[in-house]
Image 1 (spheres, rainbow, N blue to C red):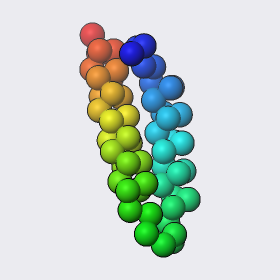
Image 2: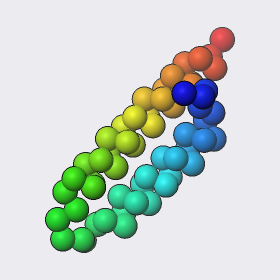
Image 3: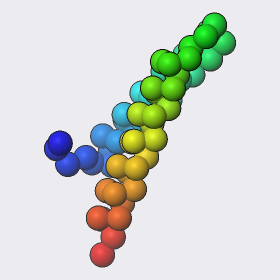
Image 4: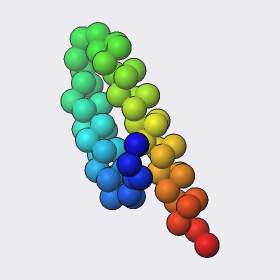
Length: 56
């Protein structure tokens, strides 16, 4: 996996949030919604790593 940048992670997180919002009100988003939340959780974890590595 290539090293993530904060900008890339923010863009990926924004896309995931938009997809999650698009599913709101849809009947039975179930597995799709769960998958998006798990991916978002992964993005947040990767962003934490990037921030920790950036600290002196």
